[in-house]
Length: 205
Image 1: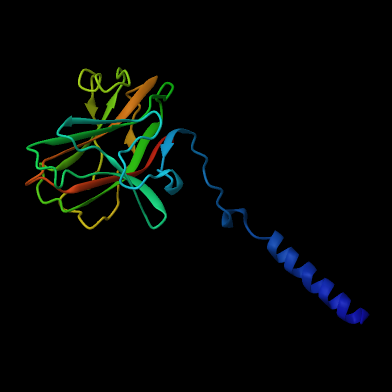
Image 2: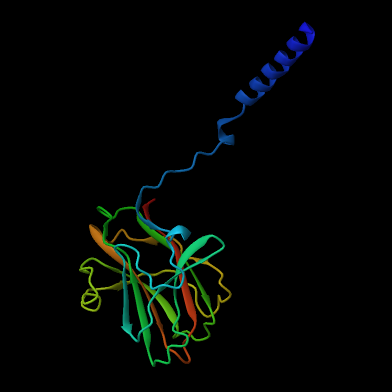
């Protein structure tokens, strides 16, 4: 019995030594990225097909009556804009983040994912903007200064609900408090595809 116990002990000890001798390079510690703002639309917060109304966000119909709505699929939430069925000559919808600060902006980047379906015309499109003077009201959407960001977005070539990463969008030209806006342009006839947005992050690299 003692021989068995000693054998087990020696085996455990040798395994421990082999493990402890592993090179440090075998273990990669993830880099911490301070998050200034993030939104992944948790499924538990989604009111399916209801107008999008998360706290602090602005959901604004510039033309027509269609607004961004809340959706989820496979335990994952997202927001969606679709002018389909509106019967209106123009549908332009904005989803604008709450205001948040990015400090001096140095090293700050922005990323998100987007998806499309039924989009067959480049004029049916998603655009992304930033503002440093938006006042947070519906009345202020069209009076604020918005600068378009150079983001990779889903379009007529990426249909099928395939989520496209935006890439890391450099925000180092900005500082202080900002708002990010997602704007879709379409109509109820020829530009009636849908757009989805998810996994929004603004962080320091």
